[in-house]
Image (cartoon, rainbow, N blue to C red; front, top):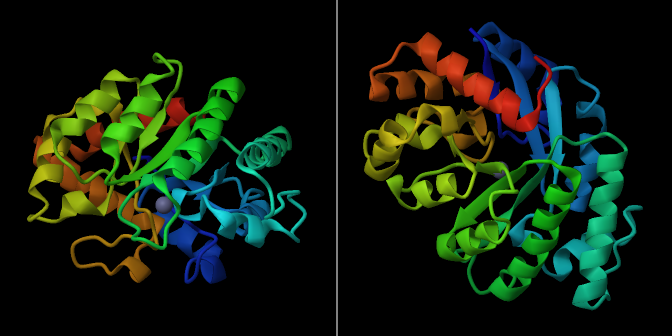
Length: 278
Ligand SMILES: [Zn+2]
């Protein structure tokens, strides 16, 4: 059986200090590949060594949490060429240039993690700015023929509107999905996949359980979001790519299908979507 963790942050601790151990424990449970999305300039740079490992595919994007001046400040002296004191048009073109450079260096299979988030509180970047930063990255993904890895909290209608602008030319995944069959079906209709993780291991996550049961299996990919999201009985900080096996087992029980079928179909979906080596 082969499984893929389509979303984990191996550049974060405690995973980074033990990448070889993390990958070995994953392989022992059939998880032989991980997609690692970075979300800000420091994490883009941290991907360098991870990207050399044959089991790892990386992605780069600018997360909505850092769509404002923070990313400019963080990037100022790290060689990505993004300055903090830019107007928004200059900032968007610098972002496109910085990300484009990483793609042309052959380092990334997807644009992500990007998206919209209105639940970060008043301190977070305004939704208008998030949308502006998102749009430039969606366009880049279409230009480069890469999938996107989308994060969304509280702004599903706004995100859907942005995705629909591409009339099916955009592909990608709405990750860490925990809502019901709606709005997932609208995103499927727009050409996206849905990523399920730890939420579907919890009995009380009723909406997510229903979505995981009802959505077409050929549009589902599996993930952990380690070390940010836990599973039933596993704290976020203890979550590793190996736990995608638990997500697959939960999905098999929910759908009444053999684990082998769940693994084969979702791994095939992930390999096709991200064009992973088979
Ligand atoms: Zn993530």
